[in-house]
Image (cartoon, rainbow, N blue to C red):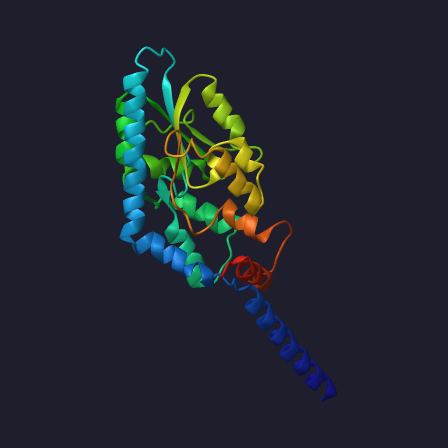
Length: 264
């Protein structure tokens, strides 16, 4: 009898531990809901995307008009995620299931090839391609996601998607070596991205809030001219700058976010 009682107690304890563990594994990403809703539903988001690609076309036309006799072929470099492809569906699913970002679900999402194009992205890049400008897609998606990414881009009508132009992450996260490989053969007219790290190495090295703001100030004359930024309030290096170094729990991240807010 005592043995049965003990076994029963162990079962109850085991179930309790499992229940606590299951609760602990649920991610607290409710704070992202507003950003995702804005990305998916606001006319402002669509308008900003159209505005970015309209400005890109103006700058490209300006360069073609002014630099007629340049012999080196022009290139435009674009980031992929939240620059030409909209992954808010993946972000929304994480919230619905209370899951944190993880490699397995991200690889699955990328290989579904179901992301939508940002408004104006396909039209601008096809226009650039029609003017003889080489389009390069430099992304920190990895080799495991390359096939799905290529299928997704091609299905949406993006031009010139190939092993040569779709440059995924193979070593570190820095995009500078890949940008330099393009610059060795082409004259880069425009770079477009949702993260400052998409534009220059100085931003990759700026990992605090103050240093990123300082770097943006340093390069202020490039924005709207050679660098064109698209909005992404859902995630990015800006969020890493808020959290700082080290692994934080969801509760610690929440405290960091609130502590960083500036009131009056």
